[in-house]
Length: 239
Image 1: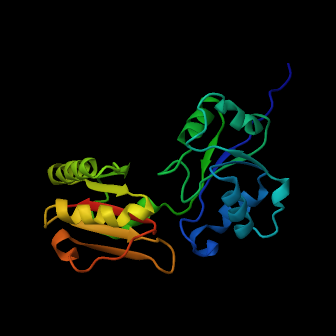
Image 2: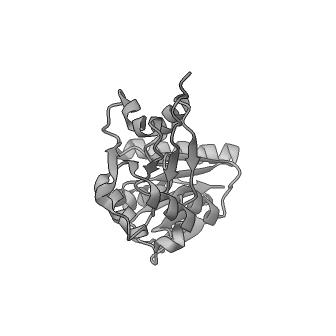
């Protein structure tokens, strides 16, 4: 009986979450593994090429194969993304920023890999959600990452009130993000909506030389606000 072909691994490859030095944020072993792969599933091919060349200067980019998987990808036919792994080739799922499938697309690829009996190997790297929570001083044993809040202001304010109430009743830290050009509007709504005693942590530009992390009560933020326009930021509230 013919022996079945050995399947490749699916490596979950973290990338930088800012313009920091790769040697600071990405472990050397992760860089070495990334440099040996020929097949990648990426959210954006251009930035993936740039990142791989940054961390491994001697890599020959034109020898690599990229399959683009983003929010616009049809969810039918995803098996094709894992064809290289089925054929015995180790494949990398490369995040656009931070760790794959955490505040980032890719979980469906990972789930499919499990269904196809392809071994999934998560690699160590920066996660803005985890770094912000670590540095916030808020409850790190019970927390919820909500993602993006609604765009419409009345709906956003209602969502903030709901998150704050959940924090009050459960002690759970609430974590959320916003599109960079709407950060200041969200911050304004947080200050006008939340109770004065609620703690708010703002973590911006993590791992970069302009990193800003501060936790204060809502009442203490007045007159002491950072300008978050067009900057990456994560917001946390808790009691």
